[in-house]
Image 1 (cartoon, rainbow, N blue to C red):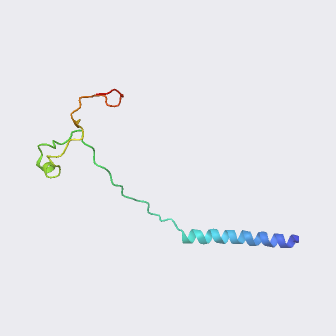
Image 2 (image 1 turned 135 degrees about the horizontal axis):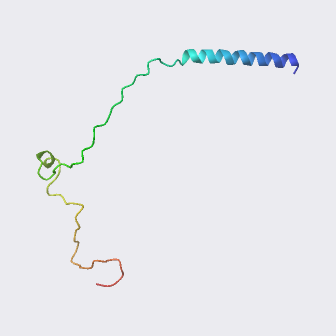
Image 3 (image 1 turned 120 degrees about the horizontal axis):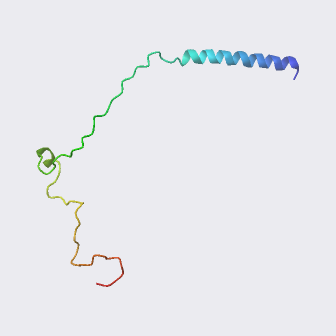
Length: 88
C-alpha cells in the first residue's frame, strides 16, 4: 500500500467513527425525566397471630392435621437410639 492509500483509509475510518457517534446519539437518546416511583414494603410486625383461636386462620388450616414440630412414635419400640447397632 502506498502512503496515500493509508491516509485515505484513516480519513474514511475517522469520518465513519464521527458519523456513527452522531447517529447513535440521535437514535439512542436518553430521556431527560428520570423521576421514578418506588414501592416500599410495610414494616414486619414482631407479634404472631393466634392461629388456633382466630376465625380467619381456622378456615385455612386443618385442625385435624399433624403438627410437624411434634415427635411421633412409630411402632412399639422404646429404643431411643435406633442407629447405634445394639439389638432391642
